[in-house]
Image (cartoon, rainbow, N blue to C red; front, side, top):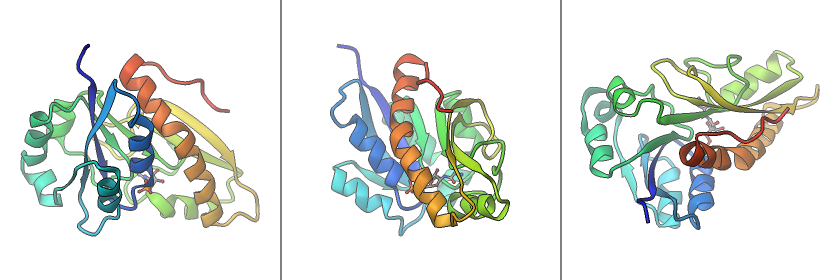
Length: 199
Ligand code: GAR
């Protein structure tokens, strides 16, 4: 049997996406969530990782941006793909060079709208509501040296009603993330193809 594909998940906060990805692959021998790396000491994702029986490894901002520690760690683990699941640091060039087209991010909006520095998590949903958007969604994309750019792999949409609050939008987005992020990762790393786009 060929070696399973090794994933490293990078996260900064709550970790619902990291958990959903780990649960999705738990019974799939072809793909293994090797480690969850987090960069905020108090990130709840570390607790989730331990509950899932997956190693959680902390690296701080300096480790990421000023050293090759993260790179060497990923290489020692023979990581094939890096998955950003609510990871809020700009990915440094050493990782981009080592994992060309092998770093995937999820963004909680229909990029190129509502992307860029400062546009993450709840800020995005607040901006969507403030601008009276009638739809929003998720974008899963390859990571490059800019925030929220890089080739789009998949988008899914949901409506925004005039009475929706940012929390309401967040709830809709979390449902899309749960439904689509794990299977899109699976299709990409195993088959280099995407599920049919939601419209
Ligand atoms: C998710 O909604 C994800 O799309 C978003 O952060 C949230 C993390 O939630 N990512 C970004 O905004 C990236 N720019 P989680 O920690 O519960 O998975």
